[in-house]
Image 1 (spheres, rainbow, N blue to C red):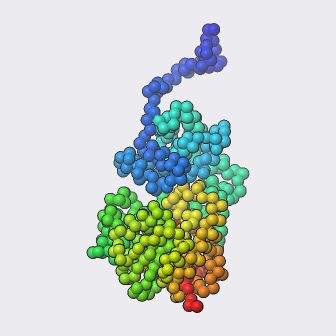
Image 2: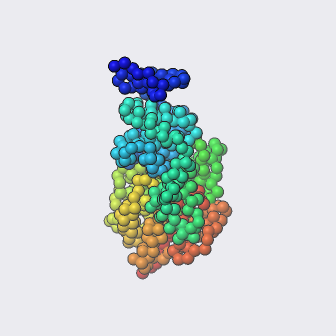
Length: 509
């Protein structure tokens, strides 16, 4: 059968394939490269991001642990490492919104996509919609990544989907996706938070008199997190403070909230003096603030302290360093053996007589037959207060997780009360502002244990704060009840994780 020549339509071969000749007076169009010459090799920075994102979605891994190893493995320079970091965290942060956009560009359910293909499409969507990457490069490099890591067929599919995504801006997609949405769902799409998290944050803000600050909080959750540093006090030759001073000389800014802390804005933290020997640590300033506050009221020589949930060892290291200064002892308890090993590493640079480690369930702490003068419960929680640093957590957590977590939190409080000395102090902290994990948990504990008194947690927090920190603690709206005597930190106000802190005292029988 001969080929038809028809100026009214595309030219096709005998097999029905459209030829690459121009139609009518249009010039012929040629591919920039033959299929065999098109790149199938993944760009190293994008490959590092892809491997991290797939580890998170496949293995429930933590990006902050996987990505640095991938960057080292690929031997990325500073520029490419920065690109891989922005691509990884931005993709994980906005994954839910990107899934809705991808869903509008495919002819099947998004649940039917192979997980690696979906991860690659998310990476491509982030480059197209939220980075400074040229559209052509974003599409071609992502397609090359898919061809290299998954296969040629998925590469063609990814090419088609990404080109559809590129037809609108992020704002254009959000407008389309939220046209008929209720206010909560609209905020969920715009700020890339699950709707249940939006509702929980709204309730918490309302209980703390900040109902009109929801969008500010959601926006702060999506900001690239600052790196907070702590110079451990009391080390030989004041090594911690010397290391912190060196970090400031290298560009870190001293914290405006508390002493002994700094904010690092760029570069590899591992290269700062003092990090390798443990004198300088990465730790959110909110966590530092709470640990210092627990040690702030007058300490008596010979006291026994307990960190009931010590892993991976950040707060335990600061408490142990303070314990060494005050000539008291700290027991760091951690149920998981591998996390107990991390605690041991975190405490290794501190004089060993000041601390010891127990590997065991915190709910069985009475088996040690010890009692304690100060106890910190940094309770396992949903982690909704650390969404800046752990963007994957917003999509990993589900409302059903609260049931088990709140039971565990209550059990840990009960166990701590049992081994708390009369007039001893119990600090209850969570990296979550969720009402069920914070105010309600404290109120229920007070009902179960009438010997407990809720102290004003603002007082020790102010006692260790710098002027700006003291001002921020008192700048909020007037509150009543439990909310008035507990401290809730916020990313959009304090620049910290949304840490909650309650301080209770056990009255003599």
